[in-house]
Length: 331
Image 1 (cartoon, rainbow, N blue to C red):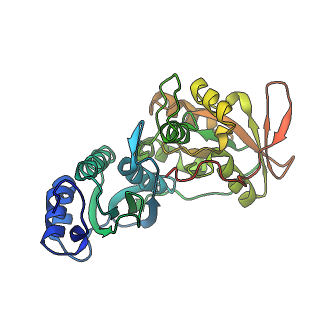
Image 2: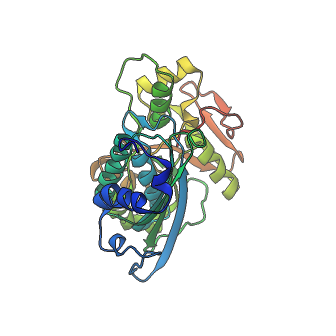
């Protein structure tokens, strides 16, 4: 058996499986719940409403500027909890690994997951590993499930004048994936924005009664999320192009590719709909206390019942739903 690669026997449930679990997964994810080695994790939860989410990650390439599939898997699930105002309590992880996958790469991925969990102050408490024959899966797929406790926050009715805040520059994850996947020779520091955002809750909880809705703009990007919110509340959204935070390098690369970055995934950003009366206070705090490059990019309106964007010259155009494939396997 080649000790430098994942083999089918690593998925058979015997001593080689156990060695893989102990030498890599337990070594990196070790905590009191996980090492009980029970069929289900036994977790003590605080009283309150529970948020529960799951997601699978098939990104290609698995290593990219600013992250990797492991960091992405942890961040993505934590951010789904964060968007519901939920403090993450614990995670599960399941690996589907192709026979012949380099052990060295698995260790890099697991180490990245460990570091991301430490940053977010959350533990992986249970998991699973499957190994499939070569060619039956593309390198490695990861599923993560998260549980969190919701304290006080709940979505509220959106009305005309409510503001749309985005917590940072957009389109960077999708752009980083495109640059690495297609080996584009570009100038500038292009990195994924991938990171866990639960740290924002320490600040946002002070304004829960004024926050109407939160969502992380992953697949479909900012534009798709705004369309979904618009449909849900039967209001239009007026977006101001000059207010959209986007780095010049990102804009230039996407112009070259013919891609609108508003439809590209962000993996470390949050869209927050806030009460028009307090949006300045919330925005200022995100910038000063959370060190975010947050901007108000638009507002809700009854003028139209769809999303539209206005440029510097007053010209307006519809910002419709994503109806074509732009960049597959970005998460």
